[in-house]
Amino acid sequence: MLVDSHCHLDQIDLSQKEGGLASVIADAKSRGVQRILSVAVDIKSSIYLSELSQSYSCLMTSVGVHPLHKSDDSLVSVDDLVSLTELPGVVAIGETGLDKFYSSATFEWQRESFINHLQASDISGKPVIIHTRDAVDETLELLAEFKPSPRGVIHCFTESWEMAEAAIELGFYISFSGIITFNNASDLRVVASKIPLDRLLIETDSPWLTPAPHRGKNNEPKYVLEVAQCLANLHGIPLEELAQITTQNFDRLFKTKD
Ligand SMILES: [Zn+2]
Ligand SMILES: [Zn+2]
Image (cartoon, rainbow, N blue to C red; front, side):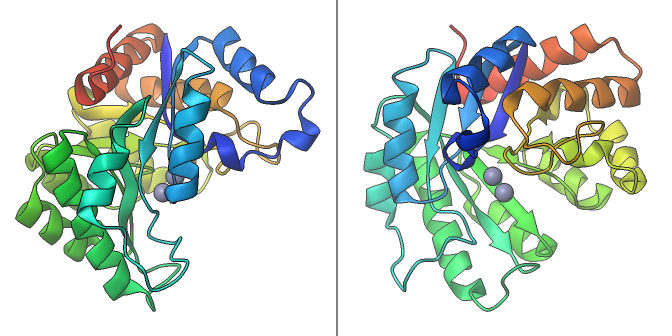
């Protein structure tokens, strides 16, 4: 049994997909994917994904505003985030975090928004899903300062071993996407091979970052199998064992065991 710990079902282009979302989910199940966490990028998607999660038992969701989804000057408040976690199907807060690679201009807004999400995580007891790119020190500083009690995961990890080690030390999990299957990702594969198995999660981040050998196609939760296989090879364990461990980790972090 596999888990896709991070995807964006509301961003997938379904016009090319016969059977629509139902077949995206059926295809995932046919490859062993039994749980899918569809992550919100703004308030609208938080509400939409909560409604959607009520139609599929394998589906769960988060509430939050992505660091690259600043729509105006408004900031989502701690209180609003905490009350959104009461919606059905919500198991996490995010995604939130810091991204100086794509947008350093909004950094102050990103920082304030991140702090609000960290505080809402602590109050609500829902783990936080963190996006980080080119902001290693700033991200680690805020995680250490506001360290929410349920902790959380650094998703789509592409940074150094030093950052992974520091985040693990603080109690966080590390999640890898299809990037680890890319030809040019040998440094990242070395980092992934060193992550303790009990802190490892897998994701697709679909519809982006389709793993090899499916590059060029739209990404879907079914391709989390390729991410799992790559990580199993890196850790020198059978696929079944990697699948079981990452599913247990997911259930422990998000309290989703049925
Ligand atoms: Zn992200
Ligand atoms: Zn994402």
